[in-house]
Image 1 (spheres, rainbow, N blue to C red):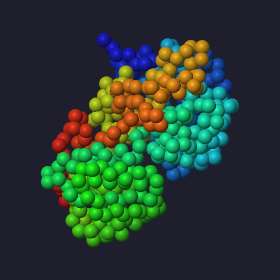
Image 2: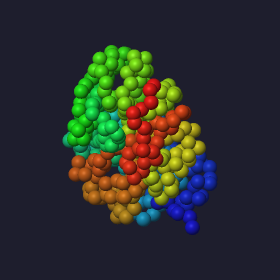
Image 3: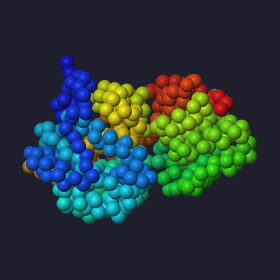
Image 4: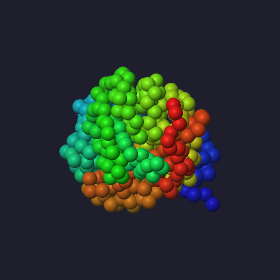
Length: 421
């Protein structure tokens, strides 16, 4: 028997067809498209902006692919008020500019008359979106800003955030390392000088202290740092440290490993942070990946599923077939946003399905035990409830990422101490 998706498309039919023919589109301000789309009966119009040019261009295009993949997977439809409806997706380029993000959000709800709004990428731009939506009594789903500022300023009233707080990013990693024998005793943290990265670092330090691992060194780096040799020298001067935890992004991980390796700094565990799954890390470090630990919000190996995809592996393989690359977590945490809207709106009042007050109440009590993003429910601040991000370790030659935490999903007990670089 075929399992069916929320929009009535069988898994067998979807997985066996050429997905590129599905009815979906994204535009950057195309009047002709909007005129054509307006003729569709009962279509759901979803609006968003992303920084499609500039610093965040690469990640934003992955996010856009995640939105489009949801539509392709569901044949360009979603269930609203008990019936499948065509979906129109309008995406503008906000250029990572908060003022422009606010203007585009106003345009989406006032001129384009969208039914639903999806969040952009970046704290300041998400908050700018939220200010406009809050003024108009709207709510929106977002996963592009993890900062607790979102919770404090617009959480639960306007924003429902589908990525865990930064303080949870390293908790799974520390749990994994604390179980090793001999148990690690000391910790050094390399932190980027930015509020979100400080939140990540603080979560790591708090969990380590709770588990009896002593912080012996913390190095704070400017966000525009290029030279990681001074940081590696500080780690060398600290002597033998069991765990070195990097909170920075993929290039920081790469440069730090290169400098530590050159100086002979070999901790018992090196944690690359939440972007060790980035292709640039794997491709640049090569054999040095063996033994590196990282946190991840999503990996194909995690046992998550939804109405269409029986596993993360099935999701990843189909995504790659469509877009030509393996999905990062950014693709999944955007795919999941229209999925949540669909789940929330399935039983909406057909006379007023997009009533924002009712949507807010539905999201506040939303609960699904499984999805392609794992279990989903929100706390009073509109933040997804997450205790700890899963941990992976790169193992072997060539090294492959294996889940090591949580234990019930672990593919390997892990390697500790790590091999020399």
